[in-house]
Length: 219
View (tube, rainbow, N blue to C red):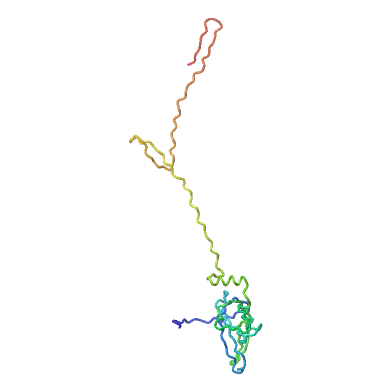
């Protein structure tokens, strides 16, 4: 039972003749026309298109209700994955939520009451799904759009390496000891140049030609 109803609009934009990915919404039995009561009932098939631009638009097709091998009804059922032996039966209400491709064509006709030329878009044939169609069906089932960009994981950059700040000890002249002082700039120790050692040169001894030798020591 419906709790609420919402007013909408009907999209009557013509659907171009083409092949479309679709879902079978349901099948209903239609009685033969009054002028031909001896005819078999017909089956009216409702399909919902799944392609962008015509998404959720509905198209219809018809088949006889007499199920004979290799005839139109049998071909459509096989395309939907339903195969049965002679004598087997299936329930019409179970024919729903099945996927396939539909060939849509526009049919021109003249209105019997007004005499106006009109068009009707109908499904003329069903085609089986290929592997790419199967992938698209699975994407639609989980809500993936055709134009959705792939999600890329952005790697988290590794934290920059920070060198630990060295701890240097400076003399504490008041306490008579050392206290650790943290600084970002290392303390450069003061180097005192040692007092050079003076090496006196070896004294030169000059011997005179005659007399007592003398030694000259430079100062």
